[in-house]
Amino acid sequence: MIRGIILDMDGTFIDSNDSHPLAFEKALREKGYSIPFEKIRPLIGMGGKILLSQLLGLQEGSPVIKEVSKRHGEIFKKEFFPQIKTFPKGRELVQAMKRQGLKLVVGTSAQESELKDLLKIAGIKDLIDGSPPPMWKKQSLNRTSFNAP
Image (cartoon, rainbow, N blue to C red; front, side, top):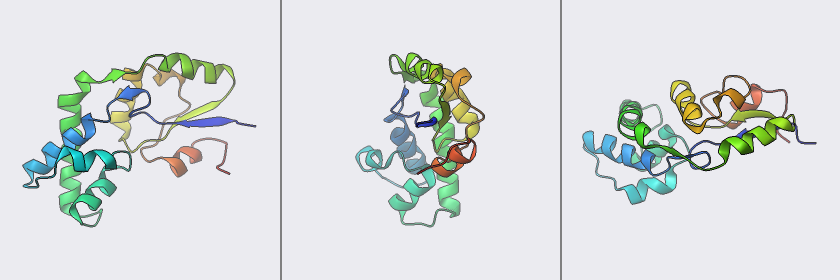
């Protein structure tokens, strides 16, 4: 019996998947790296620090990765948040899940403050159980009373 669902945001409820690589491209360029959108785009979804580690060949905790990751967030919020659109019928889908008694959490690499804004844009903030964590599967499950198989 299904008791809960882990939901994704980017590319599922909101159309932001192209915004992230554009923000990364700009943040990287500001640091002197020329990495094109086409190389960044396929890596979207793995989290910024892992993405940058793969692109730059640096450890996830390196100062450069921390700086570029922070700058990506600033660029994304300032330049791309106002343009983000929701996909149709997302709220209705989540409402249907709630009517079935499912617990709903969000699996994302977004920081919690950014995630709250994304949930508002998607129109589902009031339907999500608890405060979604910033990193996904394990932490999302830890916030619920259901476990992964």
